[in-house]
Image 1 (cartoon, rainbow, N blue to C red):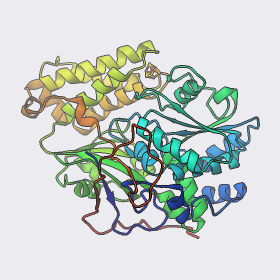
Image 2: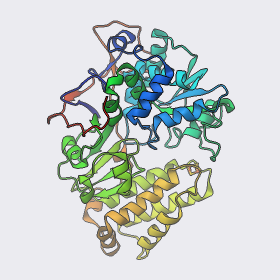
Image 3: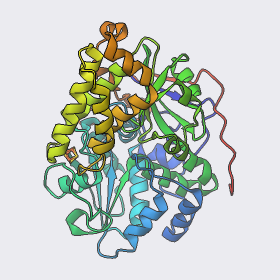
Image 4: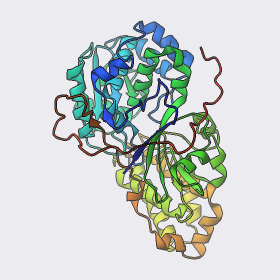
Length: 451
Ligand code: SF4
C-alpha cells in the first residue's frame, strides 16, 4: 500500500492539496480558487514562462515552450491530458486523476485556451481514475468538448506518439519521430500532449500567479524501497536524495533506482545530489516521472537491475527488432549475473550494449534497458566483478522479483460530509492512509525572481 504524506506546512499552491485521501468535488475545488483567477491566455503563458515550469511526464521540457509550439502551428489544435503512467514505481498521475480531477481538467481547459484548442482528451488506463474524471466532467462541464480515451496499461502506452495513435483509434504503440505531436498529432492536428501533473501546475499557476515559482519548483514524487510502505509526497526541487530516503524510512540506503526505470541506478555517493532535473542529468541519471526506489542494505543492486531489465524486456512493444533482441539480451545477462551463472565476459557484453543500443528504438524503452546495464556498471563496478567470480548471498536470499518494482495507487474516496452522485462501480471504498511528514517541512530552495 502506498501512503500519502503531506508536507508539515502545506501551503496553497500544492498539488497534493489538503485532503489527498478524498476525491475533490467541483465545489471544494472552487473553494480553493479553482476555475477562477487568470483568464487571459497570454497572461497565463507569460506567468508560466517566468515560472520556469517544466513538464512532469519525464522529459522535463519547459511547459511554456511546448504550449507556444502548438499555438504557433495554427490549425485546430487538440489538448491531451496524459494520465497513463507506465513506470511501475510511479503512482502520482493515477492518484491525481482519482483525487483531484477538477485540478487536471482546469489545467486542460486553460492550456486549451492558450493554444486555441477545439478538442480535449483525457487519456488513461486506470478505471477508477476514469470514473472520477467522468463525474467531474458532469459536475463542471468544461468550455470545450472533452472526451475520455482509455487504453490498456503498458510501459509504452503513455509515450506521446502512442497516446496519439490510440486516440486516433489505433494501438497504443509509439511511432517514429518526426513528426512529433505538436506538429501533427490527433487527427493530424497540432496536439499538446501534457502530463496531468503539468496541467495541474498550470491550473495552480492560474489561480495563484503570485506563487508561480514555488508551484513550478514543487513536484510529486513516489518513493519506495526497503521493507516500508511506498510514499507519495510533494517536495521542492533541491531536497537531497538522502533526506528523501530517510523520510521514506530507508536512512541507510546504499543507492537508488531513479526516475522510474529511466534514470538507472546510482550508488550511495549520489544520494547527496539534490532532487533537481538538471543536477541529476549532469550526474548521469534522471528525475523522470519522480519515482525513486531506494536500495536497502539487504537488497543487491544486481538483483534490482535484473528486475528492471526483465520488466523492460517483457514490456517491449515488439515493433523494433533491435528492441526485442536487445532488451532480451540485457535481461538474460543480468538475470544470469544475479544467479551466479554469468559468463566471464558478461560485463563486456553489458558495456557494449549500454553504449550501442540507445537511440535505436522508436521510443525510450530500449534506452532505459541499456541505461540499467550501463548505470549498474558505473555505480557498482566491483559488485559486478564479484558476481562474475562467486555467487551473491544477497541475490540468493532475495532473488530478482519484478513485483518489488510496482507501487500501488493510494485510493481516494468521496467526502462523506458532502453527498455526491455515486462513483462508477470501479470506485474504491478503501480508506486512504494519509499521515503528516515525520520531520519538519523540507525547506524551499532559494528562489530567484519570485514575484
Ligand atoms: S523501442 Fe521497443 S518498446 Fe519502443 S517502439 Fe520499438 S519495440 Fe516498442
